[in-house]
Image (cartoon, rainbow, N blue to C red; front, side):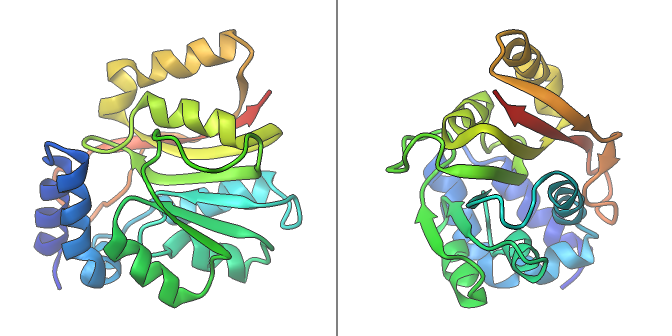
Length: 210
């Protein structure tokens, strides 16, 4: 596979008009996804893993990999010693590949921002790598995570600049003002796939739930 393959798939999933279409596009991409994003120099998983390791103890409790895809984050979380890891993704094809990695205790097929049969405060942390991006989850996804992660727990999430500049940044600020969470750390802007020409930048956040 080559960088154009990754760019073509990215353009397709970003342009999806419905959640169902985006899920089908990811189903089609699932088997070549790891190779394609590797060639593209995909940075989100490593950035998120570094932030999780800095702020969340391996024995803190269940960790949700929200938008888990093929399990790139979950695989490394298991290697780093995290004890309980669950996956959430809207693509059956991606979930099937993630299951083969054997790094998740539970895999949920569903969309971030939709109601899930998971109790409030179940997770010690949530990792959201590459999901707050065009054509994917919006501010409703962050609100949902504030329900799923327990007070004192952490949300580690990347946010594409297009979303941040079109209301997502304001929403984070409002949640902080309302006492729902606090900002613990924010990275500098970086390009998540530097080998894909024209791929835009974003940043990663660590938020503590209150």
